[in-house]
Length: 376
Ligand SMILES: [Zn+2]
View 1 (cartoon, rainbow, N blue to C red):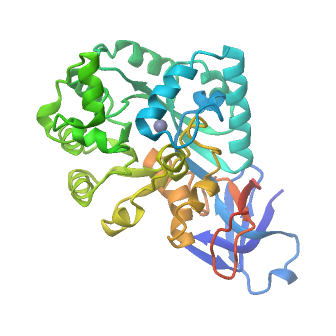
View 2 (view 1 turned 120 degrees about the vertical axis):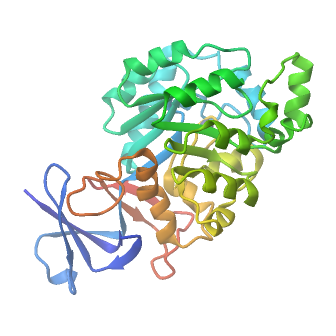
View 3 (view 1 turned 30 degrees about the vertical axis):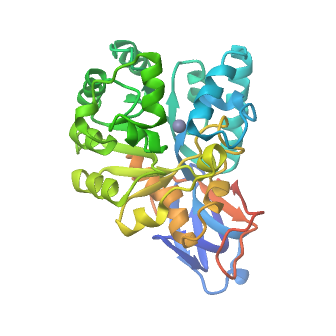
């Protein structure tokens, strides 16, 4: 039995169009896209007031941290957040952690998330992800200046389909394991990137991160790269799909250097997390000016009130809504290499269908009340 679905607007080919009816078969595959002049007179059309899009791609999440919802105060800054998470992390049972992940996963599905690039430090919630209706791509995160062997991480990744090993960032992994990961994983990597000023300052032996490492007596053997961006462009293959997450401190020079190195980088913006931790905002205009590929992530409930993609988009709503929705759908799918099946309303795809309710349809803008709901 095929369903015919319509809204006031639908995101088609990157544009918000009126008068679209999407025909979907029971499997979720789109079989037709009809341009109708009078929706009211068409028989059998399910009409959902609002804006219809493909299912969302959450390009950066840590589902396993869902149990930390509300546990860390807002506005601590990046250093304060990092120490706070270390302090609260141990106080929960496995059951509590698994239950929180199940709840967050179910809500993401209801809100229309179709696939997630999900960071993991262990295997505790892998079963939640395996059973989920959402397609998870797990990135086992290698972290720690005193860790050198990546073997355990690659062993974990081998046990789970759709999973990879990734360095946490350019400041928390020494040269040899970083290069080792870049060599062995040429498919998909995700780096927390330029989230704070101190990341770049570290490479010039100054700033709060460098002072902390000095106090702890930790040495870094990667300073010769000169900057976090140089480290990335010199180590990560231009054939690897690369997610650069946050980039709140990225400059025009950083963006241009990455863009001249690879066409496979996606800049994953997590505006709610940036707001939560340091009242910062990602450089979305700068990235647009450079023609960069942008996607949207929620980050974790440790640093966000919500994993809702729409709530994240509200924080960068100076950008035209059609573009914002493209970041959250097709661009995320391309970043994960799943654009043949997901990411846009196209015949033959099975992208999921989502309605955005409560938007201002005259101005085509999100309102504070806007939300999303899965239809298919
Ligand atoms: Zn993160």
